Length: 157
Image (cartoon, rainbow, N blue to C red; front, side, top):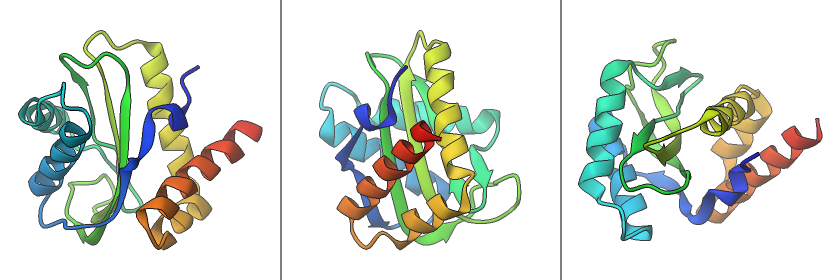
């Protein structure tokens, strides 16, 4: 089983990200990942995320979105987590604006293991205590640590 902490790095956990709009947020995500992984093209990432959103919003409810897509040239799953400085409208199922984003990029030939990752992320974010910890994280390091801690608790449950 793929573990969340093996695909999320401290450098891809950011607090206080400028929101603005759904499109702008997806652009920020693409740029962040491309900066850390120069083999991947920011424009490809952005277009893949936008194409996925067109199929239906990844706004999950409770102020959370899980933007995800298959990405050509991606060889292993990549995750990022962002907390926005101000919530943005994300066409979420409950109509609430989104301030927490959990990103999952997977290889083109994605498998059940990748679906399992999405399920792990969703069930972790289903818990109000986890959401509160993520929202209270004072720094990007604290945000990363909150995700890792939440993941450990789930694995022990």
